[in-house]
Length: 289
Ligand code: FAD
Image (cartoon, helix red, strand yellow):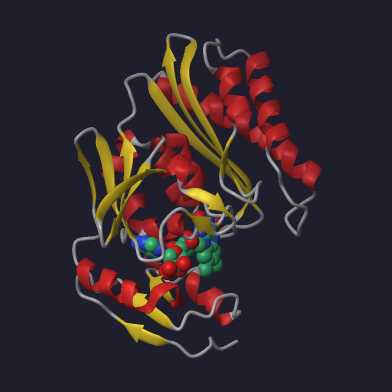
């Protein structure tokens, strides 16, 4: 279908973008990579009267380490994560995810900020950022505020960003020594959204898990952590029994819907298995394997 009629502005600075958002109110939509917004407009699932295209704003595309975190500019394309030596060397959970988001054509346009701001539980970055304990920086008329990702996703396709705020940066804390992470996704075919996926980020002291964050993709209306799985792991040696308990906790806690990707029972069991495997791989990486 052809989208409904809309106006279009292309600000050259963040300040101009914020003015446009303030002027047009929640009739406006920010356009980043357009890989979720344009299809939604074509299906008339959303009919913004104005698009505020942020692609002409310089300085929002970067990946760098500073002050103990990885800073990712909101307009950074997914493809840039795939080829970043910094991501490959120090953020293996993110590197895993970068390779399995959509397909290369989509990854050339899609942005990390757009993936998160869209708050689609089928998108891969929400779970990755929950597992890392990341935060996002939002710029609005009143200045900049930091939002922990734990507080960002508040509903289906809904975040705690205000309509006149721009997500400008994602911050992932540099993992502590002895940490490792992994992202495991099952998709029906290359380029598809997950049937289910699990993000695991652990810290190990010898054989004991001292910290764990586990998050799930496409098995709940809102991107979620599995607190039960985390509790099953922390303070434990990662035996087969402990991994099974974590997998079962995640399977019980998630809330998938039956659809063309599978039944509720299948998706829950996939979460159980993927949790065990993701935790095992994260622990191996934490030990430097
Ligand atoms: P847009 O489509 O431009 O915007 C999405 C939403 O976020 C809009 O509401 C917009 O207003 C808002 N927004 C964008 N940027 C900002 C900002 N800086 N501040 C505030 N709000 C903002 N994703 C996956 O994770 N995994 C997949 O497997 C996957 N498969 C896909 C397959 C196909 C065929 C396609 C077309 C897309 C797929 N996607 C997948 C989605 C893709 O990653 C999207 O690009 C992403 O969800 C949105 O990023 P975008 O930059 O394109 O944002």
